[in-house]
Image (cartoon, rainbow, N blue to C red; front, side, top):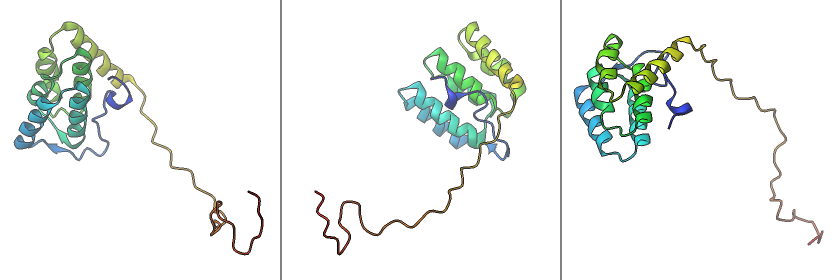
Length: 152
């Protein structure tokens, strides 16, 4: 599950125009997370929500509870840390809710890597395409009109 799509800070936005998640959205998201069978699907929902909203640490704690595997919980914590509206409480609420000390240490390690990692360069613009000749109006499979060439 770990990989480019779930990297630390994936929920961060540079424009920071997120609003707090409304209570009805919280309940709806928790229901959807509970209905998902795979942790990858749960993480996808959380990533989308983290990109659009900020979340309290109490909500993050409830959102990671249904995640079955340690790796998924670690990924979710690292992902949602960027969306926490009260990051000072992250350690005491979210990390404390993790089952194992090893999980807590791995999340702390990932979050410290985020702070020491260099900023990612902006994506390069797509290459500009040179103007080309207009395509022939006939298909390569059809003979042009007036052609008697029989090269079958």
